Length: 504
Ligand SMILES: [Mn+2]
Image (cartoon, rainbow, N blue to C red; front, side, top):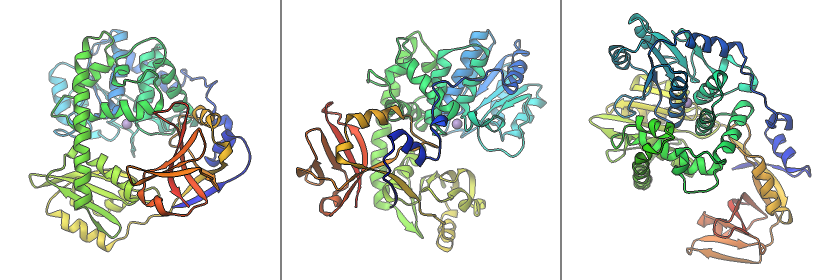
């Protein structure tokens, strides 16, 4: 790993801003004023409201952003007394996005307006079909596109100015819905989808996520609170506890229709609490399965020219992306994981920063039945016969990876305490556009070192601070720098633990 060390003596906030190439003003959203009068929004809202008498059919996406978008729009229609229903296609049976059967079914059931959220921007054929059937069409999406969709009105973050940069679909839906009437539930789910989709954490996105945390920690109880046992809801709880549960349902959608998650989250009457235990159960099963798949993947994966390829009949298609992601971080190499069933291979690839797996595989897109994604994440399906050809292509063509430097803030042991932790907390949320820096403890002096579970080294630096590594090879290295992250010790609230990523 290559590091860029920063040892200036400015305060933490300015150092972290500087590393991320932004000003403190850009980071500060405490006085952010949402411009609900933007012409774009007004025009869209006007179009929508001019069709108040129509019956709207919302088509969403099965991930957290799509689920949140769907429920924000459903709630808006309910509040306005507009007749509507929604449908999220099955990830496993139908796949992503609008298809002509959905259009047909909606039309047959008497819906005369279609609204695509978190999909639709490239579904021109299906949208044109809806038009042919006499339906009105609307699209709120943030995926890449080349020409505008065949729609009466549409919203996309590229149409907005920099303060609204990189909104995801639920952010857009929230912006629109709050421009028509203010609603806390919309802000909560706008923020949640924004956090889940890992878009930029600046501008409106940042404002929205902070709003979400504030609302979730006041007295109003939304059912989302029951997805975590924690009393206080913070970004970590949502990212590592709540969002994976919401996403687990579509990954294993033979266990539960993902549309029930919308119902669960939108409901505020406790009637939908019956879905809670099912969601928990699915998530527990998802965790067990991922553990099994990971260990199998590690055993049977093969590396070709720097890319790890793994396929198995025992893999579950909906979990391939999770496994690829996990192994990509562990090996620091691009990983493609494919589930095999009935002569087809379906799965996902994840790639390291500084590479473009999408363009690389685009060169052989004829091998694939379906193919989509972006530089660091792709989804694909292919006939089994194509697999050898894929290997051949990989062996003859190198995926270019430009090595990345990680920013590290250099600190002295004495500077590491609760004060620093509080300052780091203040800077949250970290993410795209405002990355959490690694910390380095320079020339650390420790009182004691011992092994946890006979393999993981733990260093006692002082009464309040311990450093631990989960990499057994760190046991025998000499070092002048401990590089890692600072956390509150989950078992001892008045202690801090420094989780070591590297010793150099
Ligand atoms: Mn999305």
